Length: 203
Image (cartoon, rainbow, N blue to C red; front, side):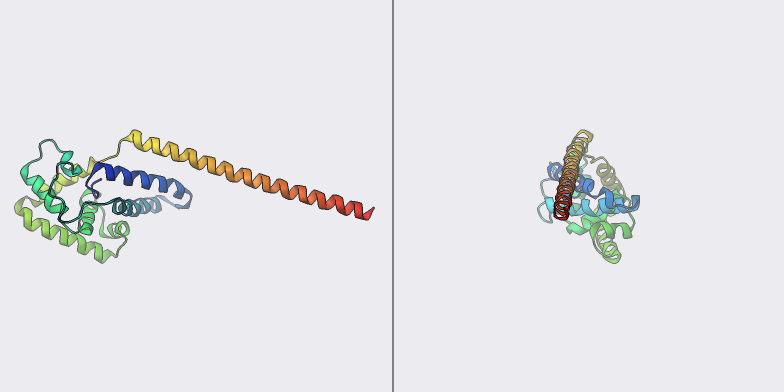
């Protein structure tokens, strides 16, 4: 939601990632693998559903980073506007650094780029916003990080999606098992028929 800018697209990305994640459960070897997968695919999903692009973020009324603040100050709104006008990858790097508190290497994994590129995106974002916000840069960045941390999809929505997808996966597993059983039954019948024919030929 923070990357996309709007709640609708953010929730769409969340559903997409949750659906994909349940199909990947057996491929993760440990929590690090799972965490890296979620970081990477969350950013990709946010890109796919459409993120706020430079030059189009003038009306921030429905932007998640503003709409989730009670009576945001003009300075904060101006900061978010400047943030939305950054290059998309600079926005991602800043949110992953300030909001998720990730190191450059983890940011690189999430953004599917080199560590050097991730660091450069972050440096450019901080430099641009620092020049605009001047002395209030740290305060506004901290405020943005707090709002970002509050952008969590409703638990009921995610639990509902997980339950629905789990049922579909369970049905698929049972379908595969039934197909295997039928195939084994057919093979057994063929083997029995061959054995019977061989017995008749011997007789």
